[in-house]
Every structure is written in C-alpha cells, then in structure tokens.
Image 1 (cartoon, one colour):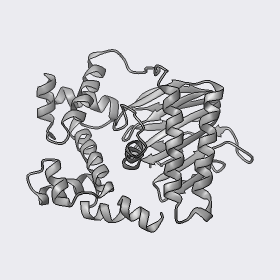
Image 2 (cartoon, helix red, strand yellow):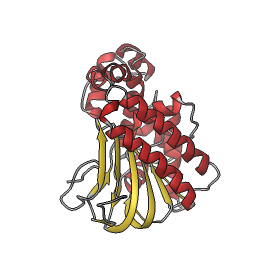
Image 3 (cartoon, helix red, strand yellow):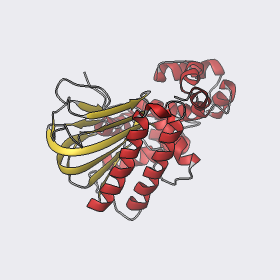
Length: 304
C-alpha cells in the first residue's frame, strides 16, 4: 500500500514529521538524531497536496509520473496536486512541505502571490538553486515547522502557518522567477498532447467535463488522449478531468462564499442534485459535508 509523507513507517523512523490536521505537513531528516539513509517506497505522494521538496546535501532518487529523477544538493522540486511521486532508496538530507491544494490556492490569492502554475495538476518543476538560496528556504521551513508544533499557538496556528507559508512562497518565487526549470519531458507528440490537454482543461473546466470535447478540440481520438494521460499520470483522461474539476470546486467550497446552488451553477451542472452526486463520486463526500469539515470560516472559528 502506498503511504503519504506524513505517515510513520517502520524503516524511516528518524524522519522528523509535523502534521497539522493533515492540512499542513512537514518532513525532514535534518538535525540531531537523524540519518541520511532514506528507504525506498516509504514516502509517496499521489493525492491532492501541493508539495515542495529541497535537497540540502546528498542525492535523492525518485520517480515522478513515471519519470526517473536524481535530485542532488541544492535541487528544488515543486510537485503539483495529483502528481505521482515515489521516493526510492537514497542517501541525502532534505526538507519537504505538503499543503492541501485548496489552502495553497487561498494563500496565493490572499497574499497576492503570482504564480502562473498555481492551479496546475499532474506536473512538477525542477530547479537548481545556490546553497544560499536553499538556506533561505530552509530557514523559512524551520519557522513554519516551529509554529506548527508550538502548543502556545493552538488557537491561531493555522493563520500563523499560512503567514509563514506566504513568506516562504514569496522567497521561493523570487528565486525561481529568474531560473529556467530543468525539463524532464520528452519532446514528442505524446508529451505535447498532454501539455495542450492540461492547458485546455484549465480554460474550460467550468463548462466541459467530457473526454470527447477535449479530444475533438485537440484533433485526436479519445483513446489517444487517454493514452497520453495514462503515460504521464497513470490515469485516464476522464479521471484527470474529474479530479481537476473537483479540485477547483474544493477551492470554492473552502472559501464558503457561495451556497451549494450557486456553486452548482458556477460549474454549469444540470442540477444541484447532479452536482452533489458528481462531487461525492470523486471526492468521497457531499459538498455540504466537505464544507462542514474544511470551511475556511470554520477554521478561523475553531483555531485549527
């Protein structure tokens, strides 16, 4: 069974982990009492989190959407939601942050941070930084981790962590805005089709949810489109569409500024009941249940 980065394992016991309501998760093997050995298959992320991973020293071997990567000292990886990432046996020191995607989006908007790929899915971005730049991000990370684990901040922890994250993201964006990502995608018909599909999906997710629509727009057969998505995500085009639409719905529900009927209309569902069934099928709970658990207003009231 695949495991998330926040779960303890029998092998990687020395990893430092801090978990705040499964919404913010920090993990590293930096500091006293940790070792640089990472055991394969113990850390896997293939869910609805945005993830940032930085290597301080050593080498990390991993597979991202079927592509083998070797991250070295001062490498930085940003992994978008629903991207499969599996860390293999390695020897390195690293730090990583996972944030629920709908909260990450809210941080971007609240603090005016501009990142063109902020709502992207099924993609990752690899940069090589300087030791000084890694240390800046490590300092921000350590402050985030400290606030998450400090019991004195119980009733304001979420807001503190979000403020810390905004500083982290501002520093990270300032650094990477001037860097060209290291590309790992092949320049072939399949990779171009996948990239074009994601762009088209981002433009039309509110109104179009059929594979046929996107394959027609791209001038390919539905099976060809699904072949491309399976290659780079392990999922059919239909599943990719559903997950992305649901992620965007979660962002709206989290802010809780619209009632269920308004959200249903916003995403052009035929009826509120159909909207509810669609969301529950993909997300595992009703829209109303999701709000009751994850509402931004609820977080402010409860202090979690």
